[in-house]
Image (cartoon, rainbow, N blue to C red; front, side, top):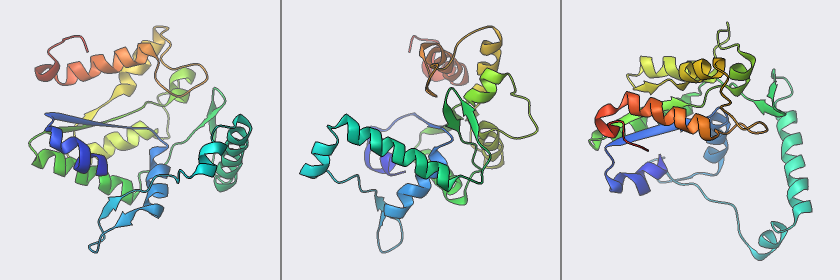
Length: 208
């Protein structure tokens, strides 16, 4: 929301696409704890980490960074000890429900973008676990499914990448880095193709 208000809006885009991953729900909650608000209660800034001399030096140490990583991992395990965990390629993949706060952020952002004259669309990173395990069809909604239903209920255009990813994986395509949850070259190309198909009047099948 702040990025839109302070940076993107002045560029006057014709289309704004927000892409979410499952850890963004927890990130919203964490950023809210340190958010700076005005007298009306609106969030006006999110302070970044302190960058004093000591912190700057500590960041140069691989040992300190490793210990910090382990600390964060143990903290996450403790905070989520009662939740069912899905692990893929050595990484835990979360599947949180949409919180009222995160949902309202997306709805308000969509309204502000439309009020500027631009189009707004939402898309979600598909579940790497379900893609790799070929278990897209499940009784439990995956993160993408939850936002697809949310988008339908709130009249927000939704670009569903999960179907395309499932189809390509069935053909033998590798769509994620092996030890990571991020897109590789194949999945970026596939996502670009889906965006082009969703907005042919903007992209006109031109190379992206």
